[in-house]
Amino acid sequence: MAKSPNMKPANNNWSVSASWTQPYLPNSYNPFYEPSPKHVATEELIKLAAIDSIVDAMLTYPAAEAIINKITKETKK
Image (cartoon, rainbow, N blue to C red; front, top):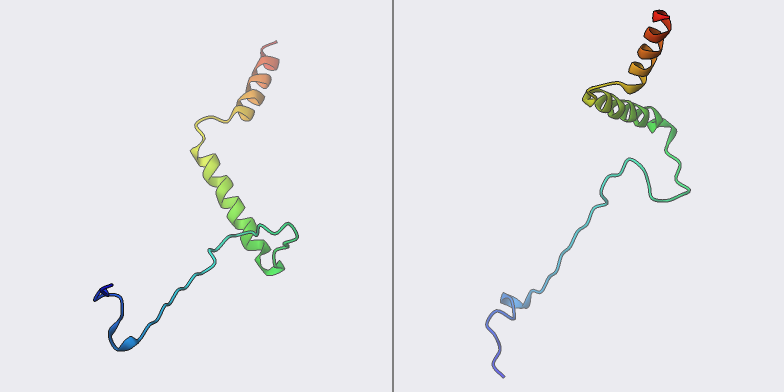
């Protein structure tokens, strides 16, 4: 059987390399994971920023409208 010319690298120097890195997650899938106390403030700030983004995207505020409607109905009586 004929050998392919690309089957052996020059000088018989075979090498294989691979690498992998753990992707960053702000939490862990481990149910016993407890965040480091020095990162608790950072995690809370991330949560607050997410809440701010959600509120900024809202067009109406149903809870506030319900309160205003209740007050205006009471004052009309």
